[in-house]
Length: 395
Ligand SMILES: Cc1cc2nc3c(=O)[nH]c(=O)nc-3n(C[C@H](O)[C@H](O)[C@H](O)COP(=O)(O)OP(=O)(O)OC[C@H]3O[C@@H](n4cnc5c(N)ncnc54)[C@H](O)[C@@H]3O)c2cc1C
Image 1 (cartoon, protein in one colour):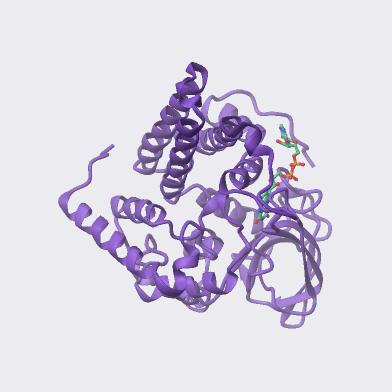
Image 2 (cartoon, helix red, strand yellow):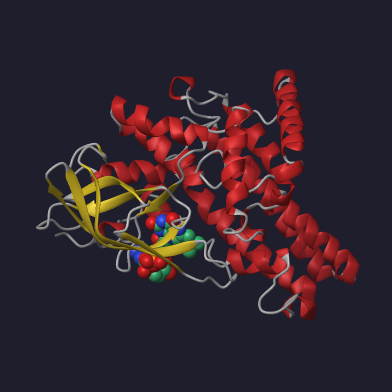
């Protein structure tokens, strides 16, 4: 593991920092510090769509994709630097996170050349926003229990069913979705991975209000929605294999940028602790030091697993999500304890939160999305520790 960067890498760091600093002026200054847990995910949508295109104009979208697919083809260390500087500049949470980090790599791995030509350039250009439609009311951790059906009618798939917790559904142009195309099938068989246009009358998006007051995710109803016959990845019935591929891409290099955001949250908590005098209290000092150590561990573990051959299945990689999600949730609790009574008071009616209050509430979901803590522990038990598999349905 190399945690030092070369001279060339450091020059690249300066280039990214300068570009971000310049780009985040003017019309985009409202987006500064609009990153991750501390911001309202659904505000400033117009500016954030425009920001995707601005990034594209500088060649700063899809930086880790190979150049043959329109990416920048950065080395791992430069990709790490890019995400660190992106977060350090206070650049906003990416509206097309799903398109860039999940759909794109899935298409590159499993798509046909026609599909790559059709779908990758608009992601690189920031023209088409994607969302992920896997979860359903009865298919969350048990995603193979998908009930949404799809069938062929002429040259089109017809889709009928309901998805839920679909992040960015109200903003998205497309959704990559798992549907049951063999009505007699069960579990992971008979599923197909379909790409569905969201802007059609037969797709109804009902935003769900979260405890943060925002509606980052939504219920999505497919009322005989349609998509072209060739808008499936791999073949009919191959949906499970492709979905496993997509989920494996979920824990990537961008976690390094996320850690930079965590660092700024922790620094804000330290400032609040100094202001309130809690920084002199041995119990709080201990908790803050503990949080700092946890953050450093995340950084070194991420660098170690990312430079490993197969970052997604390597045992150390399996603990990444469990560790950061648990750590971040505890950080939210620390923030509220440091703020004390002040943390309980809304800034203004009806529901205006400070960034730390927003962060605390959002972190309650960190241990749920992208695989719950319990499910992560099952995976660690089975895949890293070789413990017996938990009982599963066999039909
Ligand atoms: C903020 C947020 C954004 C999201 N965005 C998306 C999105 O864009 N697209 C999408 O498809 N989904 C999304 N999700 C959904 C997310 O993937 C699911 O919430 C998650 O997989 C858990 O599923 P569930 O909510 O149905 O809970 P369930 O699976 O019903 O779990 C309920 C409880 O049972 C436990 N449990 C379940 N199975 C086991 C087991 N085998 N062993 C031990 N314990 C178990 C769980 O850990 C949990 O505590 C999002 C969720 C959140 C919170």
